[in-house]
Length: 103
Image (cartoon, rainbow, N blue to C red):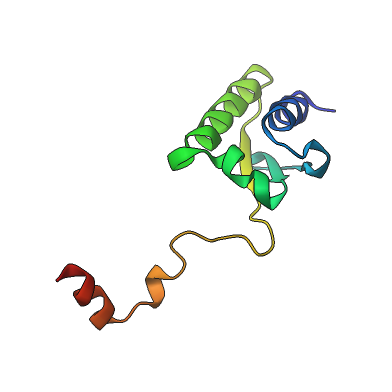
């Protein structure tokens, strides 16, 4: 297991309630390393955090791990099936609905 994968696995499993549901896929291309994280839907809030602060911190630390090993590491967090996609209904609002909110 690579250092970045091992770090992410350890960190995420310590944060979530369902560590058995954590799945991490690692792929390498010309852009660097991409770690794709999938967790149980009920654990998404623990991974994202308020205003995305936990996810930002994890991404920052992954970049540090990558720099130590001369690699660019990025993290993609998969949205679980049936999960909320924040802001998804905002684009579907009519002009009247937006103007009604303003008034």
